[in-house]
Image 1 (tube, helix red, strand yellow):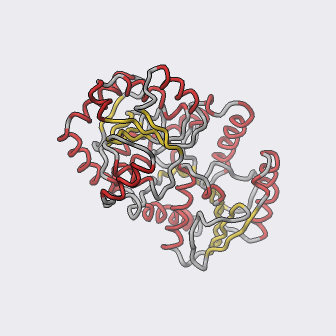
Image 2: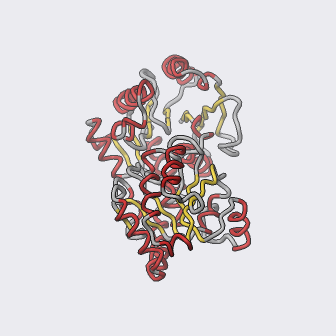
Image 3: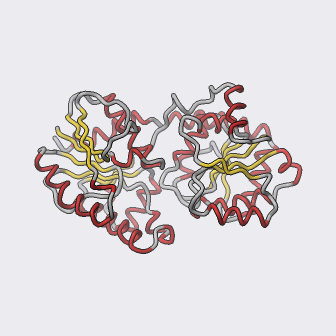
Length: 375
């Protein structure tokens, strides 16, 4: 079979970028039989790593331009590319498919944030995303998603039959995310980012859905004793809601207690997670939540929201709270920070839970989807 994969998101820092990179890497390891055509932005970088000889790279520079130009590329150039190369299956790890194509179409819809939280994607941008998701869901021969929760949202909002959707969960890179980083490396990382105490770790991006405003208020409600012992560290690029968060911190007089180290390179992130006393993930909605796996794999006690996909991903390996309740979040932080037995129990349960997730298994399931079209 000839399989084309749109890998342009592989160079991005978010969850879809990581999903694309890991899936490509694992497909390259397990499939030496089919011929792959990998579409990347020009100039291509090293984000997708080295692939096997049956993987060919095709560069395009058009998609770095205006939305209108991108749409022309998707609807005119891409169908021509697929037809000219006799592509059997086209897969986009994002939500965009061409209107017309002779190839079988597979798309991953990771979540329904654009519909459930339209304020995150206002104006033309949000309208475009929602339209593409609607059209792609109808055009696709198979829709992939990453959790049962996301599947239920897709079925309910888009009125898609269950038989057209397949859940393939995300995985975890256990070579990178593990508890085996020694103390000297952790201490060097702490020093680099000017962390001076034990710390509670949360991650970005700095968007309203990540709920950092309530997290900061919950942290402020902790006892002075706990705040003197633990800093709050929130990673992520300093954009989005960052300035609003600084205003809240200034109002609460917490500028010495809360640190924003900015974007953390992926090779450094597992070291920082290992060094953290606890990992908190207060998101209002997730299609999956890869950082949950990363915290469990590193052996860091986890507390997180009891919404959307999250309870199904963590099982009994996390302390859950209502993310809209500042009091409940503060109580959960207080409980986990003052109960050593609870922390140890969550870590052990996390190591068991993480065994359910593997990028290799995800790639195998995806390959089965491709090959089912050839039967």
